[in-house]
Length: 156
Image 1 (cartoon, helix red, strand yellow):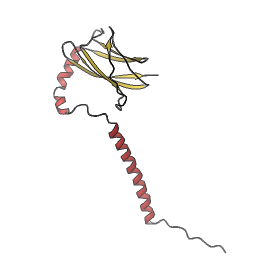
Image 2 (cartoon, helix red, strand yellow):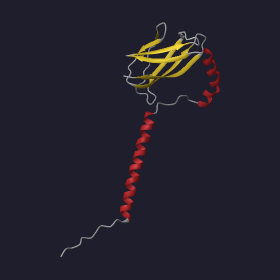
Image 3 (cartoon, helix red, strand yellow):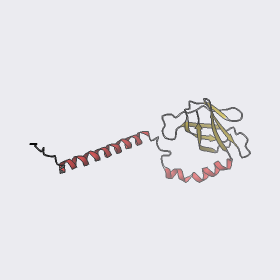
């Protein structure tokens, strides 16, 4: 004769453990994603957006009146930033500050030392393949500030 073994039953405690385990995984993943999002956030653009908005139109109009266009390119380990006027002639600015970095994080940020070579601004930079941003602030001879984020794609 064979003896039948009793089958284990799925009880309410088992269901509670399944639910608890599933929600623990979901909550754990959400916490990990939130921590990484906060850790990699580069920061605020402006301290007070309302105050910054009060002069936005005037700054934009003054910048557009300059008629400048900006184009960025990379050749080897050099970054080239071409600033041209409305006629396409190169512009030598009174001052230029720029930060070169990724759009998603700040760990690769660099501050290239751009030098005007007669046609464009050139600086050495360590670039790997992918999309980069140049956040530049230039000042015209008349004191007008020109700010722009220029996208630079590096193919290797």
